[in-house]
Image (tube, rainbow, N blue to C red; front, side):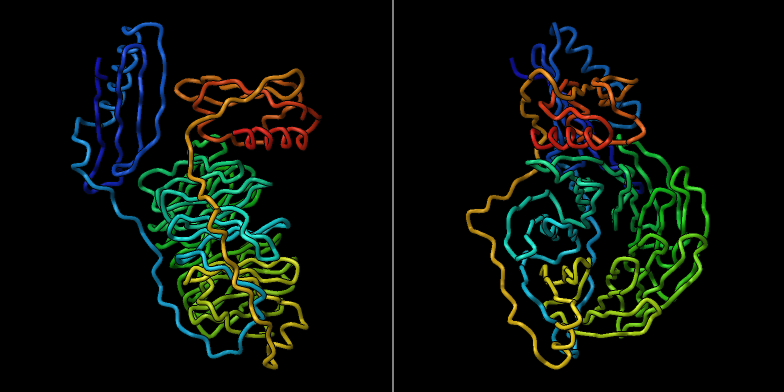
Amino acid sequence: MAPQTTYLELSEDAGSAHKFYEVAVSGTQVTITYGRIGEQGQTKVSAFVSAEKAEAAAAKKIGEKVRKGYAPAVRGMRQRRSVTRRTIVSGSSTASQAPVLWRFASGAAAFGIFVDEDRCWVGNQNGDVYTVTHGGTVTGRFRLPDGVKCIVADDFWIYAGADDGKVYDLSGKVPRVAYEIAEDVDIYWLDIDDGVLGVSDRDGRITTIDHEDEFQWARTGEGSSAWMVRCDQEAVYHGHSRGVARYDAADGTPVWHTGVDGQVLFGWQDQGAVYAGTSHNKVYRLAKRDGAVDAVYTCDGAVFSCATAPDGRFVFAGDNHSSIYCFDRGGARLWKLATGCGSAYSMQFLDDRLYIVTTNGTLACVDASEEAIRAAQAGTVPEPVDVKAATSLAAVQPSTVLESVSHADGGIVVECVREGERLRVRVVSPGYDPRWNVQFPQTVREAGARYLVEGVRSSGRGGFYRAYGEIRRLL
């Protein structure tokens, strides 16, 4: 017997919604597929004790969607909506060449970068995310469905925000959807702290979503094109076309707003300050407590990106003419050098090395030690190593399929429980504190299953985090 299929769409010509919902009933099984119009979407399969129960459950789901404005439609009649791409012309630098140790061509303009003690991550507009060692060896590749806007980390978990409106967890074997941003949010940038995600968008809004993928609060800023969001335990810092604002992390209460010269194109933070790079060639250091301008760092072109050394002792910037800069804390320019591989869309400093991703898609490692910089200013630079990805390196794509997890005595047990219309993951084993706000992959939350992680039980948050990391590896 052929499945009975109902296909619905909700699309507002003058609004933001543009999504579909399909319900198929085959005997005692109900298959629900949902997502943005023009995309494959996600699928849930549920089994019921009888065909009548399955039909009743399907009818209930269809009724809920119709009441929310969905209507019957024909798949393929409406097309996928376009998303915003950051298209900015990059010029050539007239400065001396920087000491680039190695460079990796990712294949398309790259915004996303994250660097830790183990490796570097780069994400580009083709949706490719690569991992590269500090020595310049490509070790992994993910392929997301759409262009990568940025890569952020929360403890040892890595997230990539993409142009399809989803945030993918890259911490396991395969990418999994961790957050789904509302259809009216055209992501420009993301940041995350303790499981709470901050999203800035094209319209100048700031939106926060908690660790269980639930909306917390949203505010409309005084400007548009919000390319900056940075989060910490107390606040969310938001930069747009008219300056930088601080909002209370808990409820979004405005704390301060500081105007700057030009549109904010990038943001960074350290313990006591936020840094805003602008279209008028400047980086501003703003005090977190009150938004006061503590220092201004002047470049020779629009600032696409910025970063700092620990404690802000050095401030780095990249402009739209393929130059990178270093300033001391007070604002004095120490050096300006050419990247040789495009303008730096994003950057990060670690252990005397400046890592950049550029307009032509290159991830480059620059030796920023004093000796290397002095040599470069004198005209002596190393020959950069051109890193290649192995032809056998497979691109791992997102999955909504949960692999089975073995059971054994001892370990940490987690299970999904229903609260109203939502499934939440709860820890069954003792010792977990809900205030830790640990987020579970969306597919785990939706699966309604129970998992046991073997041999990793220990006390405290650290022990649970190790167990949770094992859950992700098993998935």
